[in-house]
Amino acid sequence: MGSSIRCHTTDLGYSWATGGDAVPNGNAQEQQKAVVMVKNTSGHQCTMHGFPGVNLVNSGHSWSLGRDNQAPVTLTLKPGDSTQFTVTFLPWTAEGNVASNNFAPTTLVITPPNETTSYDLPWRWGHVLLQDAATHPGTYIGPIGD
Image (cartoon, rainbow, N blue to C red; front, side, top):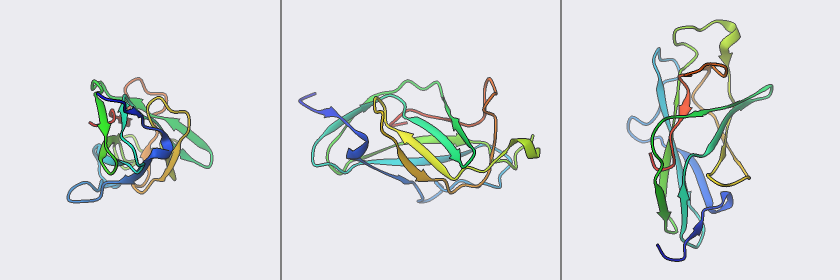
C-alpha cells in the first residue's frame, strides 16, 4: 500500500452531503439517512479503517451512537479525495414521540477512526427520537466508506 499514514482529524474536512436525495426529512415518520462527507484536505495521502466515533450533542446531553453491522474497509485517500459515512436516525416525529424522548441535537461530534481529537459538525436535521438506552436503537452509524 505504500507509505501512507493514518488520517488524523486535522487532515480532514467534514460536511453534510446535500445533493439530490441526500437531504433527510426531519419531519418524516420513518428512519432517515444523513451522509457526512469526509475529505482529505492535507497535502499527503492517508488511510482510514473502521467506524468514526459519533455523538449527537446538545447543551444538556451527549448520545454516543451505536454502529451498524457492516464490515469496515481500509480506504486510502489522496489529497483532495473524499469518502463518507452514514448517520441513520429516527426523527422525533416517528412512532413513540413523547416529550421525554424528544432530543434536539445541535451538534454531531465526529472522532475519526483511531483518533482522539474530534470535530464538531452542526446538526441540521431536526429533533431525533432519543433511544440511548435501547438495545437496537433506530439511530446509528455506518463505517467510513459505507
